[in-house]
Length: 91
Image (tube, rainbow, N blue to C red; front, top):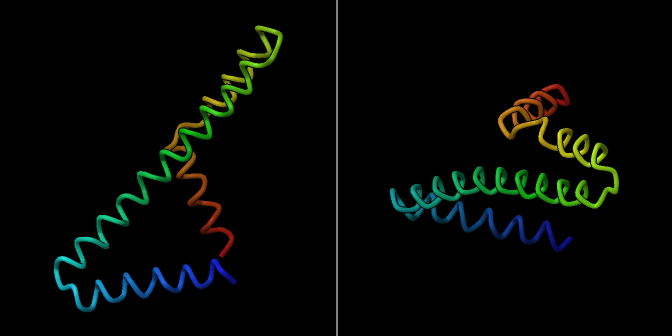
């Protein structure tokens, strides 16, 4: 319920910026959308770093290297393509 209120509130702010803000409002919204993309990549890279730390806790050097290779096997652009494909297929 709270997340719906927050989502509704943020929609209202964006809507007001779009309608009343003119070009400045549109630039703010565009910048927010671009920042969201950067944030998503930063999240993915943070997730990978966290997984690599878990790998470093493994006792065997070969298991550790295998784990790190697995974590590094999917770059962000590859992840994004696969994610987009899954989203399209689920609709």
